[in-house]
Structures are given as C-alpha cells and as structure tokens.
Image (cartoon, rainbow, N blue to C red):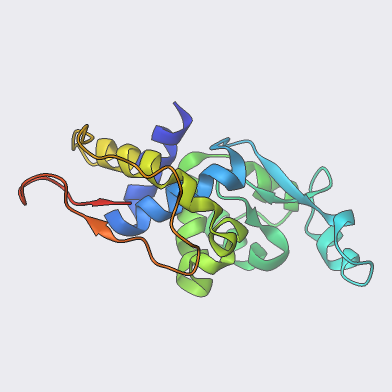
Length: 174
C-alpha cells in the first residue's frame, strides 16, 4: 500500500510527529504515488516559464510522492542524487526513500510551508491515515479507539495532541 511505503520512508528521516505531517502532506500532493509528476512549467506566469522549463522533465517540475519541485530544489536534489539532468533527478525522486530524503532537506530549509497542501490545510484531511501509517511503520498498532473528526480543524489552528489510550501507548496527532 502506497501510504505505508511513504510512512516507512518518512520515519527514516523525520521524527514521529514530523513524519505524520509529511505523510499527510503526501496525500493531497501526490495521492501517495511515487511516480507522481506535477507543476507543469507552462502553467506558471510567462516571465517565470524559462526558469521552470530549465528544470522540467516531461513538462513537469515536481516529482515523487512529496512533489519536490526542481525549480526551487534542484541544488539539493543534485547534491543528494549526484544527477545533473532534470529527468535523472526526476527518476531519482520517483523512489519512496529518495523522495523522503529530499523532503527532509526541503523541510529543513523551508519548513512544511514549502508544500501547498500544508499552506492550504488540505493535509489535515489525511492526518488520521498518516498517523496510523507512521505508527505501523514504527511498529505500533494503530489505535481503534480514536474517533476522527468529520471536519478537520481550521488551517489557522494547530491540531491538538489527543491521548486516547493509557500513557504507555503512542500519542496520536489529530
């Protein structure tokens, strides 16, 4: 299952709390598809298109389950992958672990706000599944006792920590 592949990769590079958020971001960004391609260079304003096109492959500029955009992150991806051509970098990002590794560098440099799914709050709709997938990746059983809200909290409010089991069980983000 793709979300579990993303979670297994994310826990190698992120803390548990960060991994839950980054896996949740991957849902609306790519549908957890490792081969996702997005942000077509020709969709940007005309004055920006030459720079986006320079870092495009198959007309796309963002790749992998975390949709790492080469226009803004090509130096990081070049350093991590050793690749210099956009299509070689795209191919490198179309691997769960590589995408998570690049995502860690993007997170460290720009924070979660580098992803539109975080800025719009869309990732919040994916938090419950991300929480379960990360806990499974870390060897915890998902908690059947947690009731997920139908409506996610406002994008302006941080999700609260909700303990639903005794303190010996993992705390779940909602």
